[in-house]
Image (cartoon, rainbow, N blue to C red; front, side):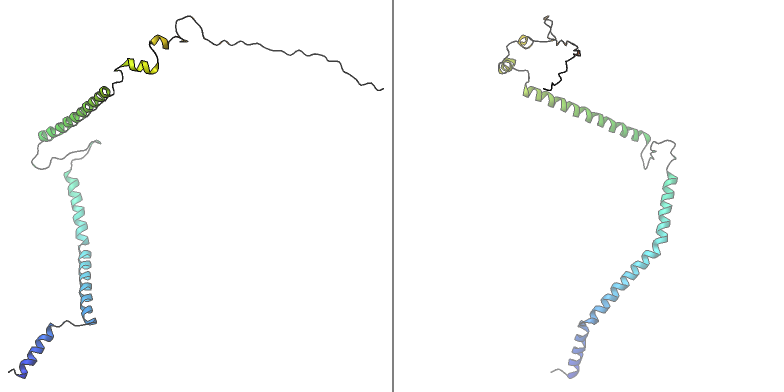
Length: 178
């Protein structure tokens, strides 16, 4: 059998595990959120001067490391374990690749045009074209050529004549009373 003291101890232990109900559980949560917001805002404001100082020092150090520009051309700074010869080799390699790329593109376009010309075959069978149009010889087209050497002149001639009006006298007819 259990004693009455043991039951009281068990009730006290269980009462610590219970979560408060209602407004008592919301107030600590709001307090925790407000404390967190206050701490982060304070840290942000406290760090503003050091961040501004560090930003200015980074800018000043970067400007001091770069060589001065004397022209509009960009000045390159070698960083790390590279040498000028290595940079020059890379630069010429890039230029060669661009030239090869342009030449290959031009060749592809020329091959494409050649294939299209062969596929369409515009001058393949001129006899069919002559039959479609109804012309046997080229001379048939140029029979009435106004600019040809046949001697005919199909030029329009403009004649100018002037018409002058001659004044004529007309007798006046007067009415007779009678």
